[in-house]
Image 1: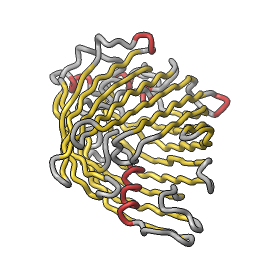
Image 2 (image 1 turned 180 degrees about the vertical axis):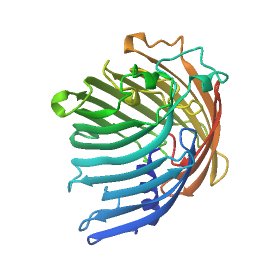
Image 3 (image 1 turned 60 degrees about the horizontal axis):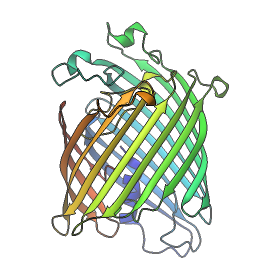
Image 4 (image 1 turned 30 degrees about the horizontal axis):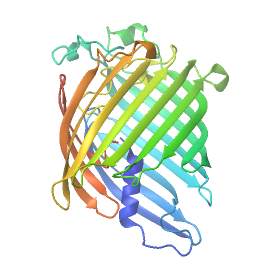
Length: 356
């Protein structure tokens, strides 16, 4: 649910064509989205964009995004997203400040092949995750499109309204009592995509490591490593092939609500959580008319207690298709409707900008 991209899309569609003096542009927008983890999401937001002096239109402006969402599952999300650049863009600061009150479900830890659509309800344990998140990042360009920097993660979580008689209620699951997370680490970022919203060529890579320690104020001690690799290339008559591979590994002390999962359309993202996970997916995007296009996608993922136990033999698979309607031709901003399917059911997804 990347509302930062949505705010950028709104700004691109409403921003002035040039900026010869310092300007502040604001835009407000409604939010209507759908994902199975949230149900129907309704709300609104605003983006504030500042360009300084004679900055070119194609340079990245300082901006702040504010979003508020309420879902039909009685979930509340409040989000504040500042992003600032130095004059030559060699330095970048961004942060996520988030409050969420999320009635949700826990389905256990692991990649259980025995779980199917018939016994999902029996495994489900409902609870409410009430969390405040502060995640600042500071990066510096070291060569070309490559950036390196610091990443900090602070989460304060209360686990409430736990269903009786389950694993969470027994206290046997790490994190069942909630608590504080505080981790500091390094990140590496590379981006050669030709478009933020609908890339047709180029690559994106982000690698992050964080260390959660008592000395930083964390109630849980563990290491965290993540890599997200994406590639795009033109294929066929106006088509684009998009590929993604992501892997995450966390140490033994990670609480259940911060465990890795795999983000595949068609699989509820908390069905399979564990200390390590990976997923890979491919999507082919092709035009149907000047404003309408279609996609087909598929992928698989797995989770395990540690990276050495991740196996291709027990992968879970999902796939589907969808339609795109162009909202802004110049910026290639699309409205997205996808139908994802797996052995656990069929799920719709609706929003703005691409899945990856």
